[in-house]
Length: 146
Image: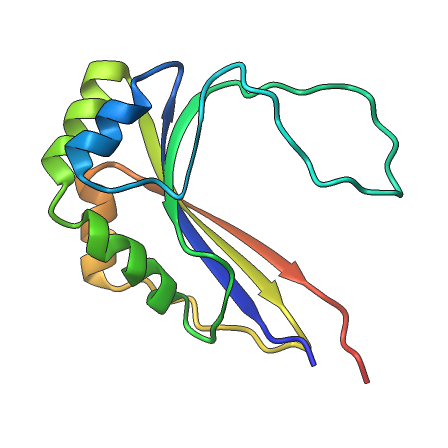
């Protein structure tokens, strides 16, 4: 039986900026990064035949969790915030110097109607506000089996 999964990641992104400097300044290795113009690599899908090569439209530094079985999004969000909470001034300096944006993406894959709690507490909201980050929430509800 498939279980409900949650993934959360923080993105710092913009036109072009030195990803390695962000990594060094934050003292955190990103879980993903890419540069404007990089080819977007997609998993092969036998149902879709496409020869068009797509390129990244921006540069990004990301820190995230893998998909985890969860019934409370707060657990995954806190994993990311724990690493970033003392880095507000560094993040804001990069945002100002390179005209960057940032956001938190929450991706939920719902299985068999088992929805996780999606509650953001004051500490999470205050941190996001301190770096002017937005939240992007994607829900994927798979059909019931039974």
